[in-house]
Image (tube, rainbow, N blue to C red; front, side, top):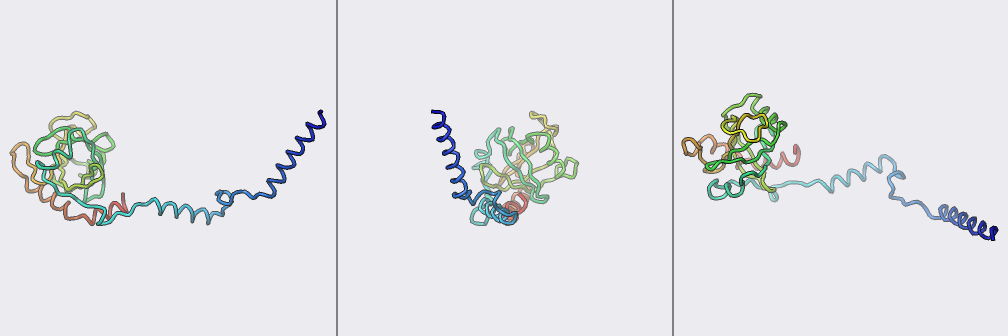
Length: 201
């Protein structure tokens, strides 16, 4: 009985060895490829995954604040802000505002980026921005002077403002020409946004 068991085990072992010699290993395993071949495959996979943005797939929407943007950019929504001049981006959350959006950076890291855009010094200077909300881009204008409430306490010491088409200031309740000039600039520079998304994003 022991001899039969040994014979069966030996036969199975022999068959396994023969099978491994006859059947080749899968040829698509990376360890069988040369470094050059593996690089070609990696490059091909990266090319397939890369999304190319174009004028057909990207637009910069320039929508009225009171008719559209107030309902799109609702309170407590986090958005991506791209500063057009510096091509730096940061994230803010809308915390309030009715004539325009009152926002705060979401954390200390984004506060630092925002302040760097203004050369390390807070300023009322208006700057054109693109804001991304739910995958769509909108023309806007931001100032860089924290003021008033500071709910999130991310190092700004207050909130800043983002204006859109026909938005108004809270104090004078008038349309600010400097903000509107920046909004118009952002709306008319779609090609720069496409270039940014394809090359610098």
